[in-house]
Amino acid sequence: MTGRTAAWGSGRIALIAILAGAVLAAGLWILVDQRSSAPHGPSRVIDMPVVGAELVHYEQNTDRVPKLNTVLRSPADAVAFAGWFPEDGEELARKLTARDFERHSLVALGWSSGCTQGESAQLTVSSGVPPDFSMQLLDTSTSDTCYAPWNAVAVFSVPKSRVPEDTRLMGQAPLPPGPSELQAFQPLTGKHDPRAVEVSQPDQLEDFLKTLPAPTAAKLDGELDSDSGAVRRFAFINRGCGTSAVLQLTEERLRPVPSAEVGGANCHHPRPYAAIFTVHADRVPPEAVLDEDA
Image (tube, rainbow, N blue to C red; front, side, top):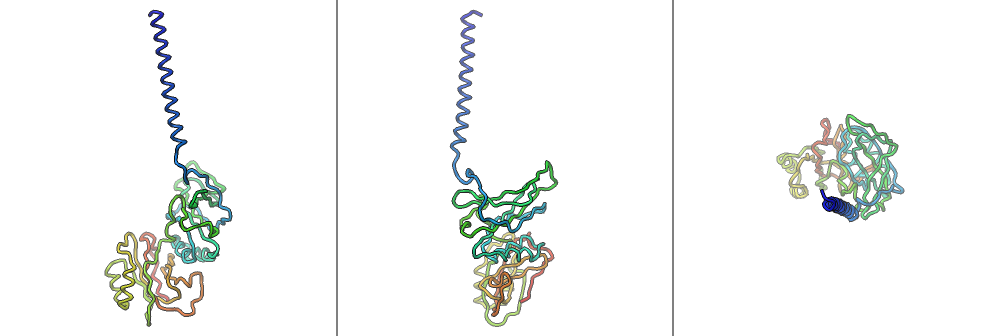
């Protein structure tokens, strides 16, 4: 190889190295530029602890935790929420309905923490608008392996002004408070004996509505969703105070509670009503009975 050829070869290698370096630098620049141009939003802001938030209920175990991220704004919402945990009977409902809903809302969150256990939890919120609440476990310990993931449920009391209607929970809109939902409610006149029946099937619903005055039956039927999906329906005729009701769901029974009586309030002039609820089919306790007590 001549000196000129060797020089050309060395120069070509140097040129290739320079070009390769330029390509690599360009690639890195593009990568950096893509990262720096990522859109700003809730995913980019830092969550901060919520000042004034109080942890009112916390549990962590390996049982299946339903997807229950929700906001409880009334005692009736609290009763519905307790239906996610029928094994607790009425204890959780009593605990949550005792809170001051005039000044506070309850933010409830459920999540899986994998092999990490926590002794407690704190509520956090993004600095964006609307507020997006999340949470952190406190005093944690993590195992390398675990037979089943740890699941946590936390309920926080938050000043009402901090929880607007468009609040987000873990990036999503809040879910309904509990596994049951009031679909239809109508006051009744005259005397009516208490009744409690399942009306999941069309013929069951038709039989129930036939026992009511035609105008009332038509109103109830008009309030029902046409497609029930993976739910069961339960109808009640009962007496109480208020213009709506919530379904109290425990391992032992399904019982309607008129809205004005939630939390143990006295009802001095009970009136008959008809109410129809839906319940997620997989959340109906197998041994629960329908409560007909007036």
